[in-house]
Image (cartoon, rainbow, N blue to C red; front, side, top):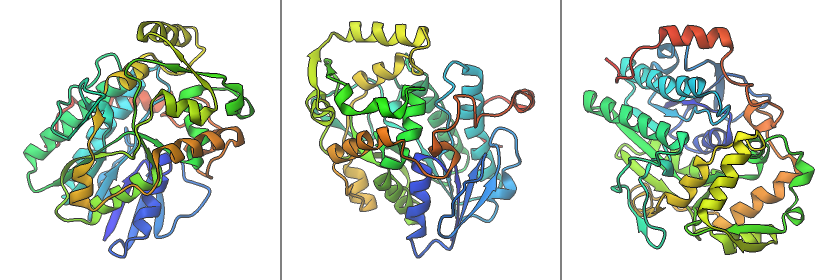
Length: 358
C-alpha cells in the first residue's frame, strides 16, 4: 500500500514516517511538506506542496491512506494565516481525499478538542468536543473535527480516524518545541538548574506521550481496515506539579490560576512569550483521557513512561536537539515555513466557504 503523509517533517510526522516504514504492508510513503528535508527516510519519497494553494488531488490519487498532520501553531499573532492553514488547508486535504476516492484518512486531532472536564478521573472518546473557547488552538481543532464530521456524512465509505493525543515530546523535537512555545531563548539557558521553581496550580494535570508511540498508533490505524473514529493517546503517569518539580529539579510554588493566567497574558501582550494564555487555560481545563479504546481496538500501548518522555525533552533542550528537517532544526523565525504574503493573498481569494468536499 502507498500512504501519503501531509506535514511529514515535524515532530509527529517524522515519527509517523519511521513507524510506517516498519510496516510490511506499506510499500511506499509519500511525505508532503513545504520544504524538503535534508535527510532520507526509509520507503519515503518527498513532495514539496503547500496545502493552502497547490493541487493536492494528484498527490493523493491512488493512495491507500492519507495521514493529515499539517498544522500551524506559530505565528499565533497572525490569526488570518492560522485559519488559512489550519482550517482551509485541512478542508483542502479532505476535499482532495474525497475527490481522489482515497479509502482511508487519519487526521491529527488533539486532547484540545475536549470540553472542560475532570482531573480526578479519565474520560473516553464520547466526552463532549466543544473545546476550550479561550484557546485558538482548541477552537481550530474543534472546527476541523466538524469539517471531518461533514466529510464522513457525505462519504460514508471513507474510513476516517481522528487521533486525540496529549502533549507529544521526543528529544529530536526539542528545538521545534523551544521555538514554538518558548521563543528565542538560547538553548543553553534552558538547563533545569536555572529554573528553581515550578508553579503549583489547581487543575494542572496533563498527559504526555512519546512521539514514537504516537507514530506507532498512526501506523496501526493506517493498516487496520477496521480502525475508524476517535482514539485517545497518552501514557502514564499523569504529569502534575510533583512530576514537574522532579523533572526540573525545582521546588513547586503554589499560585492561583487567576494570577498565573494574568502573568501569561501579560507576557504574551508584551511579546515576552510566543504563546497566548489560552494554552494555560487548555492545560488547566481539558479532561484526563482514558486510552482503553486504542489499546483494545488498535492493540496500541505506549512503550515510554510519561516521566521519562518529559525528562528526555528537558535533557535535549540545552543541546538544541533536532533533525535535518526544516521544522526540527530550530533555525526558523516564527514566520518561516508559512506561506509568503503573495501566496497568502492568492489562497485567501481562492478560498471557498468551509464546507465538506462536494
